[in-house]
Each structure stands twice: as C-alpha cells, then as structure tokens.
Amino acid sequence: MRPGAKFFIFLIILLPLAYLAASYIKGEDGITNAKKLLGMDGNEKKVPNEIYQVKGDDLQGITDYLTRLETENAKLREELFKCQHPGELVPTH
Image (cartoon, rainbow, N blue to C red; front, side, top):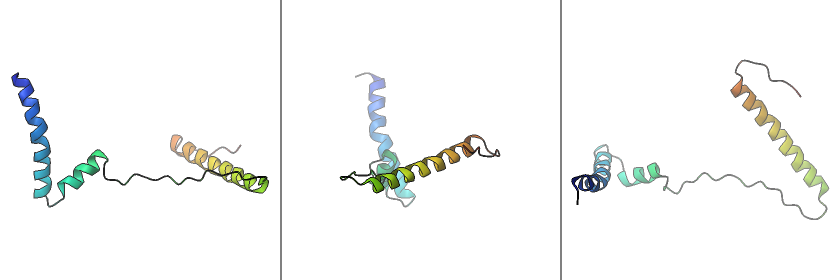
C-alpha cells in the first residue's frame, strides 16, 4: 500500500474520532452533532400538504382554493420584488 493511501485511511479514522473528542471536551454530544452536520438527525422540515382534493361538483371549494392560491402568489411576488429591488415601490398590476 502506498504512503498516500495509508495517510488517507488514517485521516478517515482519525478525523471522526477527533471531532467526537472535541465535542466531548466542549461538553456536547458528538454523535448528535455529527448527525445534525450530516443531516441525519430525523428533523426533516415537513412542508404542509395543502393540495386541494376535488370531490364531486365542489365548485365553491375549488373557487376558494384558487382565490387563496392567487392571493398567496401575489404576496410572494411582492416579497420577491422587495428583495430584488430594495427601496423601490412595488408596482401594482
């Protein structure tokens, strides 16, 4: 085995142990910190599922849902414009 390969294998073993030791010295839980760092902590952001389920001839429900989506869209477009053009007035359509 080449010296470079030995070095990388050594780092693969040493770096996680060093991270766990440093976390322990700081008084933290190193394994939990590592899981959070790698995104394996199980706290995925859950996006609410507000997809409207059409049932029969629910025209009023569909209309309300469409109105809510249009309002949200307009609000998000306004926020986007404010971020892209700070200090300018938001144009009305």
